[in-house]
Amino acid sequence: MNDFFKDKVVVVTGGSEGIGKALIDALIPMGAKVATCGRNQDKLYNLQIQYSNHLLHTMVADVSQYSECQNFINSTIDTFGGIDILINNAGVSMRALLKDVDVDVIKKVMDINFFGTVYCTKLSLNSILERKGTIVGISSIAGYRGLPGRSGYSASKFAVNGWLEAVRTEVMDDGVNVMWVCPGFTKSNIRNAALNSKGKTQGESPLREASLMSPEKCARHILNAVAKRKRTLILTVRGKQTVFINKFFPSLADKLVKKFFFKNKELMK
Image (tube, rainbow, N blue to C red):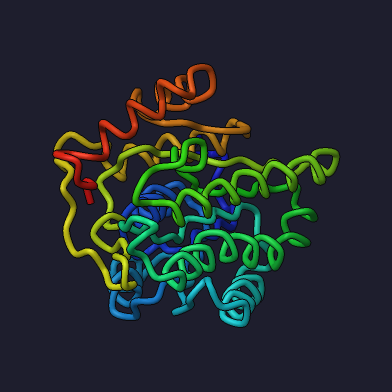
């Protein structure tokens, strides 16, 4: 796998922490030229300090804004000459029942998770077509099964999966691989940064982090799948079980998902 990424230009959106940071930590030792963006300038600065002697391009950018995606992608192409692999990793979650949530929260989740993927993919597409590269969407089990209290998040990930499937079909004769990854529960800041009903960050997670897959392990699985040019990747046993049960036994899935996410008749946030 190491040789596959050597000298390739890899764009990872949202690379300052979590899975995105783990991807960068894995890619740079393999000789990849990496570009990443994020909204936190301090975290990006720390990343630059960590890899000061390596080929790393960073830019502060909010992927929900087309103009900022344009600046980031264009600057990456200007810096490295093109793009081989795009990993659409930037994302945000939410924790609120529909009856409680402001509609603007759902829109914000869609703007970041779905339109951020659309913008960066569209802007990178010509370069990826030229290099017969790879487009990756970091999706979720919530893109296969709607989850209570996460309706906007589920909608955004269903949209990502369907959109990438359409794009995959469009470019399948051009030598470009399109894949989407569903990590399942992973140790990540996405739950702590999840938006509540008013669009404020949740700040804590009820899940036992020690029992979750590490970002580093998740990143290794993702990069291995990219190197093998897979179509989809569903991680964790629970994730695979959820997709299987939802496909073949949807009524049972309804009951199991409700039982898992509601404790004492209250949503597990």
